[in-house]
Image (cartoon, rainbow, N blue to C red; front, side):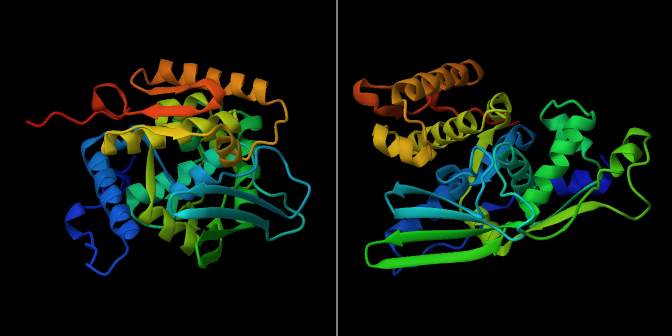
Length: 322
């Protein structure tokens, strides 16, 4: 890591410059700002290198799990603020919609953007991604990485929030622009010739995604998410449980999610709900091995109960002062 990179990565947004809500702002906006301030406290006191940062909408409505045959994909979830709907659309009929492990690539990108506080993200080598997720650096991994970027670069989001008497939405490409590696670049990396002088890989997040990410950044423990990187549905469920555990910690309460709502939120098409519940219970067991403090379990009837983590701590421990 060069000096420039180390300085950039150390940047964490300060809570002292956050705009406070005026008395006329809706309660939900004030609550959102309070949640962001608590998140920023986590970022400032935790080890940001052990965090992934994603956008709340991508937890509520993630990418499809499998390749899609159409040119768009819709996923929605009910929240206290209303219905959240995310539509992913293809911008290029020759390029498939992003799916599956593309959510890992996107989480890596949103993490770097939040750490740098800049929608423009640059890097020197694909090895950075492979090292973070403990991936093999062979041709198969490189091709998967390259194909993932192409799908993300040629797709757009439509983010909608529907409340009683009000429907708001925004449309934007996932990436505003990109300068991505080609398959031929892999040989240069293998020989140590990372890029031509003065060149860097880089992308710029679409404005809608960047604005939403800044307003609703969600911290996820890297160790937890690394465990589920090859299992899209398990990744989404683990991210959801982690996020709701974080909220329970700060409200000192518990959450109960009905089975029907959970299935909708996960966008699951599984018809065998008994088997689905069994697989989700297995995810909870594996999650507890990586994060022993988590307290989440299924009650009779399939209701998912999430309580504050033991001892009131997150997977990312706060550093001791002094």
